[in-house]
Structures are given as structure tokens and as C-alpha cells.
Image 1: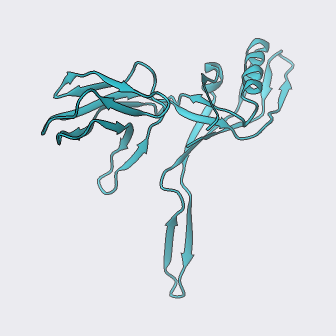
Image 2: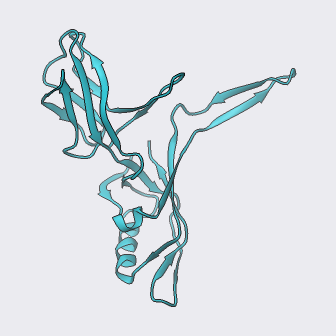
Image 3: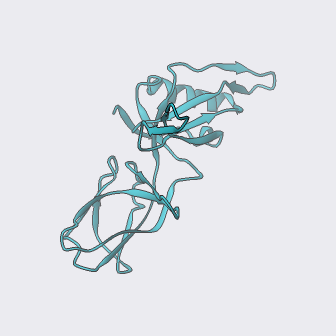
Length: 196
């Protein structure tokens, strides 16, 4: 992945609406039954920035950011203000072997819980608790892999809290804008797509 470890300007992020998108296909049998296949195991996040008006200064900052990413060329960090936190989530019960694991967020459901892989945790926010005591760890902030100093002993309970971002890119290599009579600049809708 071509990735720049940088955020889009915050004054743009507040205009974003998000949506998780699954991909599935369907086959109908001769008896009329439906067989549904999941083409992708995980949902891919999409965000749409719309109804966005900027000052001339803000527009210059966004224009520079877009050009620096070369349109679709480079992904960047994006904060989904409605879904960016994990708090006190169970990770594992010690077995004497576990020393490394991938960050995930668990979406609880009585029938089929959903697990989302997290690859872009926010620096300085990953907190591991072993039997309710903080422990040292190494975190790769570009992959979401966590390495413990030593394996968990049997029956030790590991929980985690952290903030995370989403790696996204612009969906198109161009964007449109319009000068408004009040001096502001209106952006046409801009789509962002998660890069997995």
C-alpha cells in the first residue's frame, strides 16, 4: 500500500458520512432457493464528504493535501468520529505461548459477532491490562501488531483499550469546486475508500 502517515485536515473530516460495505453475490436455484456467497469476508469502509463549504484558507490547505496525495495515489489516516474506539475488550486467556497478536475490534452480536482487523492504531493510545494491571508492550502503528515482552502465563486475562484510524484514499484523481457569492468555496461530493 502507498501510505502517507498523515491526517486529512480536521475541518474536512466533520463533513464526512460513513458506511460499511460488504460484497456478496447470489445464485438462484431451479427450485427458487437463494444461495448467497460472500465475496469479501470484511466490510470495506466508505466515506462521503458532502455539503462542504470552505474559506479560501481552508480550501488552499485541502487543495495542497489532495495534490500531495496525488489524488488516488497515496492512502492516509482518517478518523471516523463515530467508530474509532475500543475500550476494555478481552484479548486472550493465557496459555503460556501467546506473545504476539493483531489488534481487532469486536462488534458484539448474540448469533454472529463480527471481528474487524485494526491496522492503524493511534500512537500512544494502546493500553494493555493483564489481570487489571498495565503491562509493557511493543506496538507497530502501521500494521496493528502487538508484541508482549513475554508470553502470557496460563489463566492470565489480557484486555485492551485503544483509539484507531482508518487508512483511506480518494476514490477519484480529481475533485470539483465552486466559488460562492459569499466568498466561500463549495466542494462537490468527495468519496474516500478504505484501503485494506
